[in-house]
Amino acid sequence: MAFSVTSKKSGKNYFLHGKEQELRGGHKVTLYYFAGTAGENALNELPKGYIVSENTRTGLPILKKG
Image (cartoon, rainbow, N blue to C red):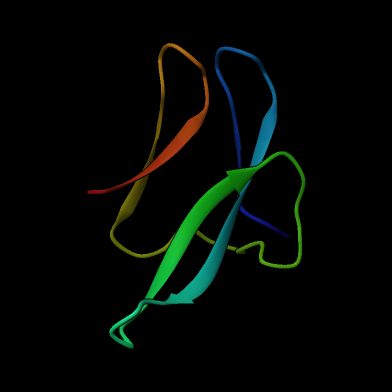
């Protein structure tokens, strides 16, 4: 089951996704993003060291280190 968050402002569910990306210098990073549906890159749990916050103006979830 994919990790999901419900927006307090809109009531919509958002699912956490992660995608590994290689930068120009060859360094690899993982990009995290939220989407309205669970796709093939959906994660089952929150990455260690991160917390979920919500943008007060738009209601969209934000992943922060914390």
